[in-house]
Image 1 (cartoon, rainbow, N blue to C red):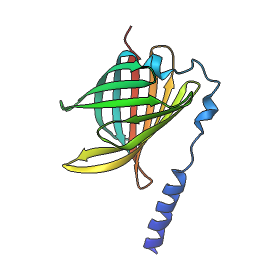
Image 2: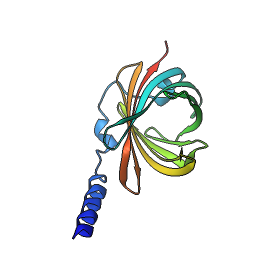
Image 3: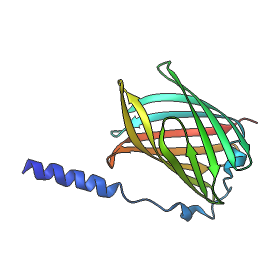
Length: 176
């Protein structure tokens, strides 16, 4: 009987994780997000990771040096964590069309895909994370919302095999 309860709970978790609002729902939201405009120059960000229970596990800051050449962008991210550790990720972005983007980075499996409508960007990818000396491939479902010309909020759900592991929350601010 216990086995069936566990299987039923896992099935509910998988089904609950499948639904999502289509990014097109935000097509009329303003201000409209233009990735090439927003991610141009230096952007500062403050973030945190919370596990699936909501416990704050790690805090961090990010400095992003961003530039574009035509439809190709580079986001050079410098992370500094609350425990004093540091890391870096360099994204190469490509604008496919008005609403679609593609991105790569050394610790991203394959390519990230992005859809942009109105003030919202949905960015999905698999990230290689080093956890206690072992590399895990974790699914990220990022939602970014432009609040005004300088501030953007980001909420990311991390999962593995459809099971929610936790969330990353970020606040971005463009430097004047």
